[in-house]
Length: 299
Image 1 (tube, one colour):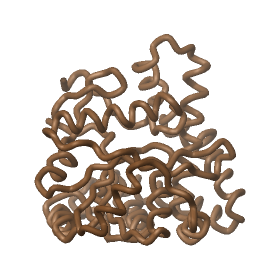
Image 2 (tube, helix red, strand yellow):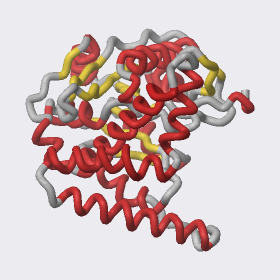
Image 3 (tube, helix red, strand yellow):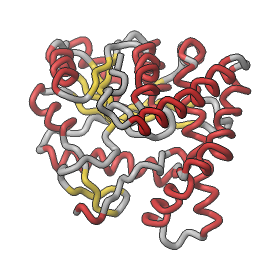
């Protein structure tokens, strides 16, 4: 379990985190009392119509959308930001609906050339790093792969709210495979799992201080090259994968793209950026536009 706030943290900040977590937990408990589809619709609507606007998420998302699509009209940016928040709300409650998600993904097809590569690597005991981003719901594809017999772990970044982080980590663990927090202790466990021929998930689409500047959706953005470095170090396959939400709002297309050829960390990471950029341009409402992915003042 992730640690709770340090007693050295400012009292006001701890109080805000405690109160906001209490609201989120109450919302989740209310939703989990409903049948699956109504609960997913409810949290999607609450995030897009109430929580997101009040928290400033929609405004921030609109700013990022304008950065990438400067010619998009304001009304269209607002609609895209609202749809993005709806997807994030649906994803949140889906990931708390572990049993339902695993049941729904039982026997679900997984497509793309990366699946055969993953199967071959597993038989050979070769490690695999599956890379994705905050797009659609990547946990849907992880759940489908678990139901196909894979045990896929992950490396995660602790959330700013430690109260929320403590129980959200449990949802990641429930989908199967070990999960490791970023940091010295987590990374060592992650590396041991890779060395043993395991399969792990890494999300790479967030800003990382001091990371190399690469192209992301046509704009310079600092991007961690750690996934590529690990793939080269341990001769692991590097496979982009996605859980693409379908028009009904509940189903997913689970896709494993072809492995990225080994070359050097910058070239491989740029190929990862190009992969998810193509997915975002095809379905921009499914990417989480809220985090500060681009920070021009730091480049």
